[in-house]
Length: 406
Ligand code: GAF
Image (tube, rainbow, N blue to C red; front, side, top):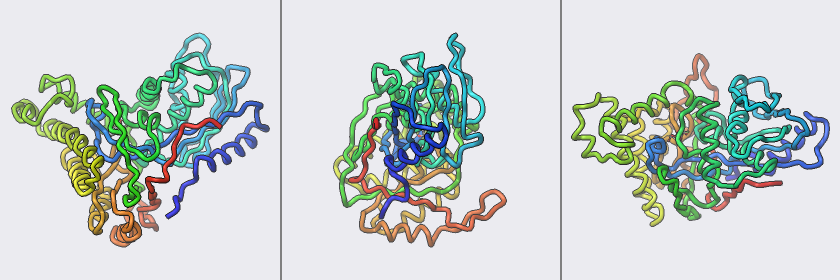
């Protein structure tokens, strides 16, 4: 099945057209870069606990195209239809060290944040166009792919030392300071270091990443969008993070990465039930992720699928970051023979599910999800469409996601 999303090259053509329309003409030296979104196969809410995650980069990308200017002005236009207004921003780069503060529109804060944390300041002025095929608020790292695209663009204007992990960390800092989300490192890390045909087992403490090949043509990954938009800059994500830190502190550990289930049981009466359940999810999920990566390496897809479902149930019951739509998508997918596993992916509270299945049952699986899941009510409006639009079928052999220069 063909992907319903434009390729990076198609997005670049569109961005170039928009550049000329917006700024009047092409500059002598135009640059174009792209950075991918991601899907996390397993290891959820473990990154800020110094644990393991297993994401893979997607052929959904954010593209940034533009050119340097001779002044200290930045002008950026987004083609993203979901972006909050206005779609064009203009600001002056401070020359006296004054920080670039976040403000409105929200999408521009990612640009400002990355400039602020760029590792070879000061950056020159520029004008650019941004467009993306990563769905906003879909749990597929639209923010990280934007941050990494902006950072990569700045690298073309003024090179830094090209250290990839520091680049991911700088983008993570931008998210903390300018988007208000105290995220872990997973999304930015895989957007910088993810490659086609593999997932990455990332140790979020040592920052070491082990590629896990995913090039079996008999296997397909299906991502289904619940169309429930998630917003991680509300209170739930920071609350989860705080609860984990509290649990680690009660256990006398630097992070939950160092805790075992025995440690947790021994300290059961020292913490409230909610904190206990959050910690239980994290400790078991870290262990599941390591085992899942092993299963994938050995081609033991049934075992991998079982761990995916355990992960989902834990996120639903212990970590409480799932929602009805995600749960129903997982249930529907698991009813089809040939489906190995399914789970919510990303921060939760909406967004997408990820399903691992045998390639030959893909059509049947999509159809089954479409006909068995009800139409949900969004706010005060009933969607006339099944909420599973759009589907993305990623044939793993076709992934190709470099951060490219044009
Ligand atoms: C979001 C965050 F940005 C990640 O760092 C990670 O914590 C994820 O939620 C949950 O696993 O995507």
